[in-house]
Structure formats: C-alpha cells, structure tokens
Image (cartoon, rainbow, N blue to C red; front, side):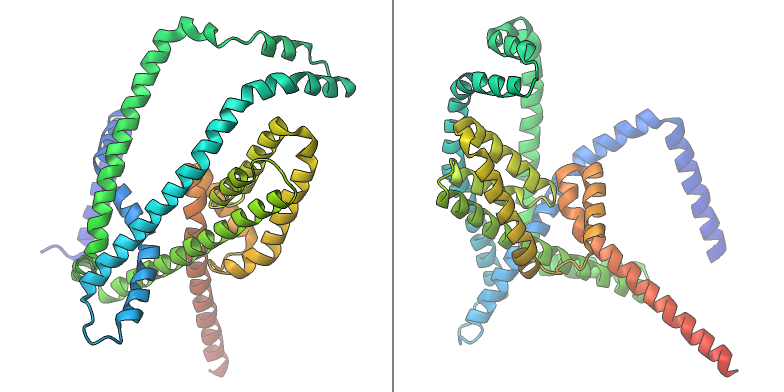
Length: 376
C-alpha cells in the first residue's frame, strides 16, 4: 500500500504529464474538449434549466404543502411535486403566449413602418444636422441609393451561410429539447438524486469537507433563488411603470416598450440602456417631437425604481455592495456574455460572503492567540 505522501507525489506527476501532453497537442486537445462539451451540452443545459425552474417550483411546492397540510387525505409528496412542476410549466407557457401575442404583432407593425418612416424623416434629420454645421451629403447619397437588390451577387455565399446557420439552429433546438426533458426528470426526482449525490460525496471525502460542500451549495441555491425571485418581481413592476407612464403622456409603442423594459431588466446595468435605446429609436421614427419627453419619463421612472422600489423588492437579497455587483457583471459579461452578467452577481455574492466569513474567523483566531500570549 502506498502512503499518503507517495500518493500525493504520484498525483502531481500524473497531472504534470497530462498538462505537458495537452500543451504539446493543444489544437487536438481543444478539439477533443469541444467534442466533449458538445456531447454533454444537453445535460448541462438540462441542469441549468432545472436549477432555474426549481426556484418557482419550490415556492409553489411549499404553497401547496401549506394548503393541503391540514387535510386528512393529504396528497403524497410526489403528487405535490408533479402538480408544482405542471403549474410552473403552465405559468411559463402562459407568459410565452402573452409575449408572443403582445410583442410579435407590435414588432411586425414596427418593422413595416420603419422604411417609410425612415424615408419620411431623413430630410428632417438632414436639415437638423445641417443646422449644426454637420455635412450629411455622403450619408444621404448612400441611404438614397441603397438598394437591397444589390446583395443578389452574393446570393451563393448568403445561401451557404444561411444553411450553416440553420444547421446550428437545429442542433441548438435539439439540445434545448433534450435539456428540457432532462430538467423535467431531474425536478421530478429531486429527493432521490439528492440522496444519491449525498451518499457519493460522504463516501469519498471526509465528513467535514462534505458538510462544507453542502453548506456552500445550500448558500448558492438560496442566493440564486432570492436573486431570481427579486428580478422577476422587479421586471414586472418596472415594465408596468413604463407602460403606465408612456400611456399617461400618450407616447407611442407604450405596450411594446413596457414589455421590452421588463424583459431587459433581467440583465443588470446593460438591460436598462438597451431597452431605453430601442424605445428612443422607435419613438424617433414614430414621432420625433416626443423624443425628449419620452427620455425624461424613462429617466424619472428608472430613477424612482432604482432608488425606492428596487431596494425594497430585491433589497440586499444577494448582500453585495454596488461596486462588487458592477465588477461581477463586467467579469461575467466578458466571460459568458449576457448569461454571465445575470449569473455572476449571485455567484460573486456567495464568494464574497465566504471570503468575509473566512476573514472573520482568521481575525478572531488571531485575537485569541494574541490574548493567550498576553495572559502568559
């Protein structure tokens, strides 16, 4: 039998050999890693979907347990779990249906009106720019002579690119479908999977380390649950306020802009700017005379929401200072795009809390050591 030190040295040697082999065959390693990610991507997508859906599902499950808890013929936990999952999926389907019925017609109408509005407003914009001593001759010539038929020469390249995009889209849809199926199975078998994972963890590592792992996992789940729940409520409130404010001042596209603002508010920092830019563009096309009042209304509602509503709705749900929240959003966005902006904030909150907890323990231990030395 090998002793502990020999095992550690052997593990270090193996890791070094593997790293050397990867560096010597880096392109092949990247290709193998890409293939491996492609194989497990439906599982990863399913786990992410299950993690997100578990937030509303857990809340519905607790509500059903409270409602049925006092009944004599209390339904089984598995039945309550199935009912909560069905209600969660039904709510999501309802939200998607409302989104399609509200957003798609408005987007189609906006798209159909963009070209004539552009042609109608271009002289006004050119005159306004000329009043500012900005030469617009080249831009106006380009816009006036712009013809979509000119792209026909590149039809072959466009068709090839379209086929490649369609193939990637079909592959992505298949992965998402498999991910949804995996997520449903995971959510329906949560207790069984929890017991199995717990047995594996406690069987292979010490109880102290296993307890620490479960402590961090529970903190992650709680933090993400609070964050996602708070963001959902905040999105509904902000979208409703934008819709009401734009309707009161008779600004165009009030339902569409309110909806887009609510959707974009799920993305911290960036979402507000994106929805505002789209709103101002639509209003500029429809009625340029109302662009300034729309900006004022949007800024006032955002200010009221950020200063008074958001702290109470989301509050300190993640327990992270604004500067660290911004850094987490920037790092997550650089690494993983929009999903990184959303998911890195709760993750940073957990890391910050663990660092704070570890720092406090070390300071307390240091004070105890100094006190002991003083008494001696």
